[in-house]
Length: 143
Image 1 (spheres, rainbow, N blue to C red):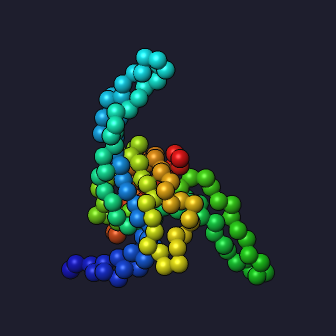
Image 2: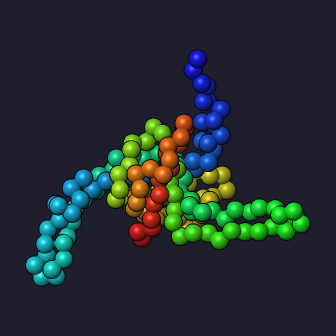
């Protein structure tokens, strides 16, 4: 008997409201050229290729959680500086050093975090977890 995941996909799909692009530098630093004047490695142009674009979400890894203690006061946990990317399972498997760019948002009323639009993130782990309908990976801000 097959499990019907349509309901879960609809619910999770509402969370995936960032337009994301995944870029990969297939040659890594091996194709960079040494600039004799500056002594720095210079990547060729273009250096990265677009391997996927679609809807996903980038959010802080330790999003502030509100819990209601017994006395009714609300406690807010401090946020961390790490982020996570949530992608549909149909997205290709990510590799460390892939770059995720937040290209925009389709969220009604504007993006979840307007400061993330246009930012780039480096994939630091292949996958924190893969679930039935989404893949979660840890990312770090690079811009």
